[in-house]
Image 1 (cartoon, rainbow, N blue to C red):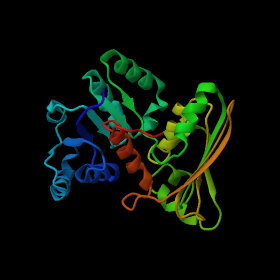
Image 2: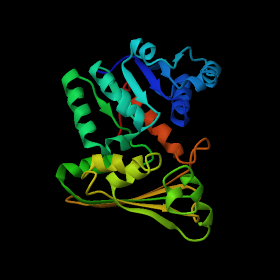
Image 3: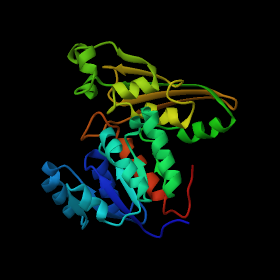
Image 4: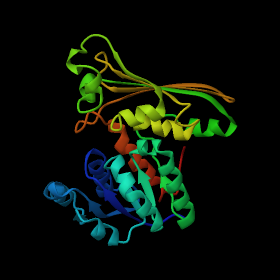
Length: 277
């Protein structure tokens, strides 16, 4: 049975959090109320101001105890892998659903299995949106019959890799003409190495054949101005090739603009009368 209105708690108020707040304020996130928002102390004033401008009367706090004391149906993690490690178990144990943006945290299979067990035990759910990817619906469908091979190639402009492990591999400012391969290997290794840039590889892996069999290639590419993900699938039902050329978020070039809308769509579907895909 779907909720008539969803009371939502939000952890983090960066690119994804702001996008979600705007969607809630304009009704694009379905029948949803933004209740508490958990942020870092230094972000209190800017978060409060933004929510006020949107007309949202949400509790803003840096105190986890105050945040979790508010009754909610769903908690949205929009603040990175460390937040998943710190708070995911608590959310699921309370019987609330948890939507996770930083799916790369699940390269830790012990953590993943623990959270799945808690969700089953307490009647809660783990929700992982498709993020910057297309084709997750086809992959999960194909997986029912059998998938043999999944590869994802991610290309982002060199400036999108500033502040990541890529800076230890190459002088990003020197990449001006030809793409530079930052990594090729398993999705598990890719998501661990670049937790802010390639959560998509982990999402793709969990939807299909797993972290170790899914192949990830990662490039700093001066020939592209967008975040490009090329996905190839091969299985019993056939082959699929998909290319997503997503614009980077204007607030954070490491994140695709599509990511926030994926979260919004997932939340909207929880109260929708019609769901497609």
